[in-house]
Length: 437
Image (cartoon, rainbow, N blue to C red; front, side):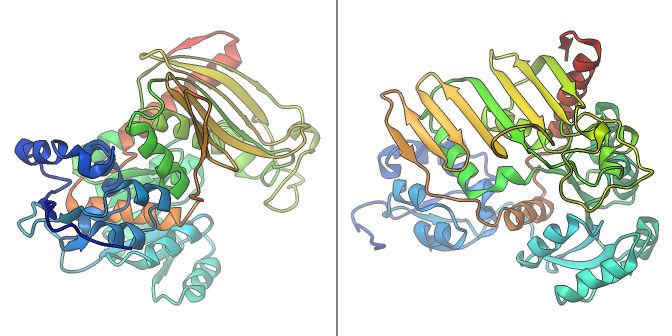
């Protein structure tokens, strides 16, 4: 039950954008109110749940509950603490919502549905080579949007302020650069590009044109992942020095012969498809240290024989499969961290697996089917949070960054670093030697 102790300071002036040292010192000096919840941890919650857009006085539990923050985290916050987000906020909110165009009606479906739950966004355009598919997507979701078959026509129509890029990997750089040069904000699905050179071009264009450019890494916005991130930020597991990450399918080659299985169109196989998700998760949870080297290996034992096929329809008879179907390796970082990973579309194994395990000096964080924390005494604490509506939270973060003029997480710079890691792993596998980054 929500209650307030009158003798406690009931409200504090706080802004997640403010750099007011006195304000931060005031909050930090009242650590007992947080029951161990540090300022960094609170900033993390506010940042990843879009609470910075709420300029109002409200009970913290009510706000966190409305934004689906996990019960475990709620319980750790003092129920006596209230926030006041100052009316003299430095943020300038537009009077009208951000007009968004979704380019690509495949995974773009998830983006569109996420935007529909964000009050500051309105989808005004959908673009796909198959205009029937684009129109169907609009009809299914009850929106009135302009339909385009060519992204260049969308740009000429001047009907959007921002775009979600949900096109094949080889088109990411071309379309992103065109959108940024036309003054649009960009949310680009992972990977940012098919190599680090193209990724850097996108990052440079975003800086030059002063536009928000965010990489779509939806795992970062899951409820359980955010709960674990908060625990890490609080120091619960100490220094993270080793991580294991896996994204393994037993029979999951996507549409054999399509763009996913062609090097020039996809940039790689599971390494750049599912591997980029799990590697990014391990890297981000570990604090995004600077990578220094990578050693990788890869195999294609199923795809060339048209075995291990998964979702995406029947194989294309005259298609091409010239990527790996399994990649593995180890990435070393400047702070001593190493991440050991595996990404597979097809392998003889008991089941599909996806996990990220991080080991620290004071405990461990295990993200898998049953997320948990293990402390230095071996005590296991389950995390009750599940995935939640990560797509909505991701889109909300993108829109909030546009409205607030803040940098997204992940931004294009992080997308470049991730592509440097993937490039190094692929090169290492080809040359059978460790590669410096």
